[in-house]
Image (cartoon, rainbow, N blue to C red):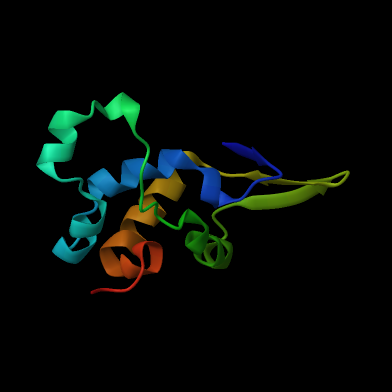
Length: 105
């Protein structure tokens, strides 16, 4: 995957990792919509959060060398293998989900 002038905060493909990781109940409570809401409003009519802070993975991926970064002109260019990034995110979600979804209640 190639990111041109962007960080991991816009990489929605990382949502795939959420299916791989079993999130704790206090995180699921934050991100699961109530049943009545899902019944009343079709999914294509809404866009609500909370959204995970994907950018919190930046220091971890940098430490592990999971992305090559260079600059072309004034643009920061990031190249990575998406499968490796998703696996890394799933691993970190299992370990510290609060890093991406905020502190526990």
